Length: 224
Image (tube, rainbow, N blue to C red; front, side):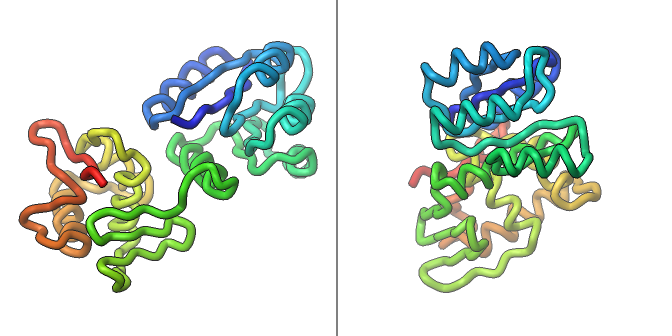
């Protein structure tokens, strides 16, 4: 389980972010001030840090510097300021990315996973049942031959790959696809996409081994 270090002084934002991250399979350690962050960063190992630029006893730039001195992990700045100077300063301080509040939850999760992949902390390759997916290049192969997926089919597949231990409800999948498509995706449409994806990646779509149906609950990824 990947360890996320969240440095955010707004208690409500921190609570909601922690719930989101834990639902996505991350472990979260929260610090509300620069001082708390300094104490924690020396005693625990993390895989990525989310750091608010504005803190009550300092700023996120100083926290980023302390993190960089203690651990070699990606840092993503959370900022309410969209001005160019703040962004440039953050990146010059060594941040890997930044995201401006308010942000869409799925965008933040995507940025986190991208930063983890870039840092080598998450494998960019997935293999199961003759299917191989390189999430870095977006290339999907089945038994050695390239498989061409639509944007939504690929997004659907990524949801399963990124949540290998979870049962994923239809409601969750609908939310993911709606975010990716920018338009409404209905329940019947989801059934069609699941069917199409299975036809492209399963040896026998009628007896799937990669995307399994969990009756009354949703779907899950087959065991590798």
